[in-house]
Amino acid sequence: MLGGEDPPTALFAGNNLITAGVLRALRRRSGDPIALVGFDDFALADLVDPPVTVIAVDAEALGHRAAERLFARLSGHGGPPETEVLPTRLMVRGSGEVKACSRW
Image (cartoon, rainbow, N blue to C red; front, side, top):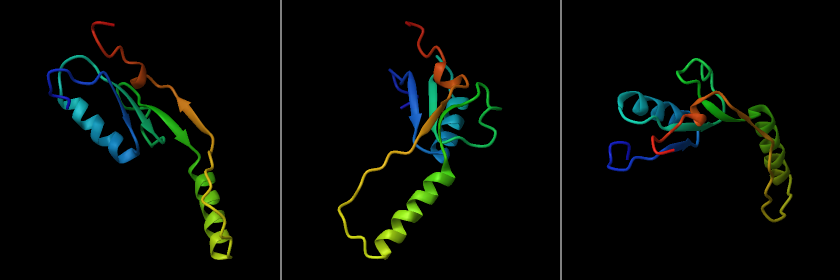
């Protein structure tokens, strides 16, 4: 995808492992910079050049809520599946704001 005729101008990585792989691939390529935003913060994200912009989630709150729901199911709560949205924070550091295309 990155080596194609019309490469993307921006990428969103859905987790830290994918973010790391994208960073490796972007480091190996030449051409216009590609904007990158990752999901979930990670150690050293601020030390990459440019620092990685991420959508951060409170992993402790996520785990706590998941455990509550699991224990409720184990205790017999049989209601329908529920959707719950936990707060996130956009941590702007520079990689998502890269001027990604020379025609912009």
